[in-house]
Length: 639
Image 1 (cartoon, helix red, strand yellow):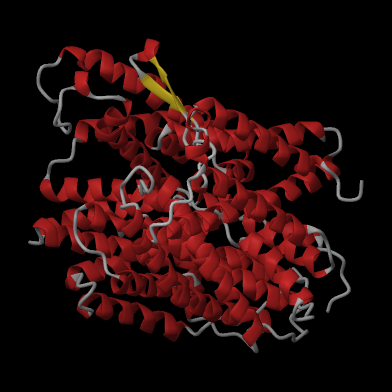
Image 2: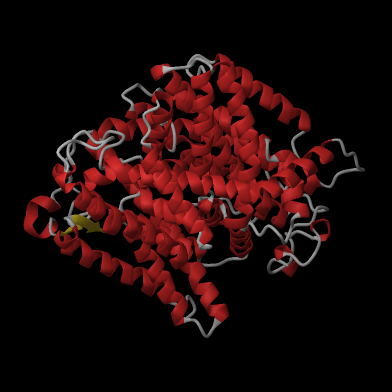
């Protein structure tokens, strides 16, 4: 093991990528793809994949698995297996990150099949994940050197650097493992007492009669507080701003203007006077939000176009380059694997019965997977995988793919499913490409072997795909995909887009209004996607995330005169928040299991129904929990 006590300054730039000396130099040979590291990585991929599946279907967001997995992997390797090998720990976090990636790819798209009223099979989920995941990893390979080495210092890969710091710190001791586990326990208990025992409401809300009876609410959930703390106050405020426009602006406006209508206004089937805030949001606001998200995706692509061209040019010129003996840290899977993998995915997508995209759908799936894999890998370098606009790129894909399929003779329900499955392959590829690029950057900084990590990541996603699929189907069986408990916001959006294009009944006026909001946001120099997401999702989610953002803001202000301490305490809070999100999501799956078995554990609602059903009870409990998060985050470990 290297005697270095931390990452060198060159890890963050200031030197050419070829001149950077990683934490473990290329001349050192340490075990990486061992049975233990792959086993732990797969285990965490399953856990974080299941947790993110639940979280994403419920609130439309997923959280990074790499950083908490780096902490937990290092702790288990040292504590149980007595191995202090940073390259094994890196392998664990890289494989674990695939759980998060495939969860996002699957839940953003495939549940739309259920929303349309058709059966979604486990085999469909698994094969879509295997095909999309394969090209997602392979298409990053020819770009790895350009994006991660040549662009070293220009593309920051913020979450990759955080994971690298965690690995270095963890390999030399630290309290990070305990912090993550504390968050895991705190988030799990909060979920058990709210969503399980029902001692307070998870979604308290208040009707605002002066504003045409619209609603203000907050999701009193540990996971959202954790997400808000991780993304910070700026992103939280952008989301909340979009939510305010929708719920305190557009909904009252629609209610006011439509109060005198005597016939339903498409796409609603009842008159506006009889609709409440939730109905107006469902029938009108979501289309406006969809337009804003789509605009954000297209604008992001436009801004990335120069880099996409440069990436392609560099990749193509580098494919035929031949050098001397490659260093261990420069080894990738062969380019022949990349080409063979693309051809394999094309033919399997065409011929596998449970997918059946046909030749046109298969060709479009491979083409857009390649195109957006480049975009995804690049964007992650700027904003991290947690902020990767996967849904925006998927919407762009589905708009194009559905239109092409409709023009070429695919129609009706079969045409919609074909378009959605092809889009799902692309969505998985986009999410996996971003996660793979992020993990490969950490590997480059630490000094791992890319080839081993690339193979390990695919093993992890292949096994985790089964469990992600099982969780999706279990949650549907218990709650119903598209219900209030499991809203599946992105999948609902994708179902609207595909069905609207295929049937030519999309309310384009609303979509265009949303796109105008997106363009306005871009012209103001504000990040589009957080605002668009706030516009699209219930205000409850944005308010819950804002709570976490405010906690982080207060922590930052407490140590504003001590930059070093501020950084340490913020990082401690991020680890706690990561644990909270995972704990909440995992306990949510357990609570769902109780419901599926017909076991009623909601005894809190029976003991004092007047108290437990009061929204102010939930508000007070959320405030107390927030204070605990703040107090834990500011408490110094060596105080």
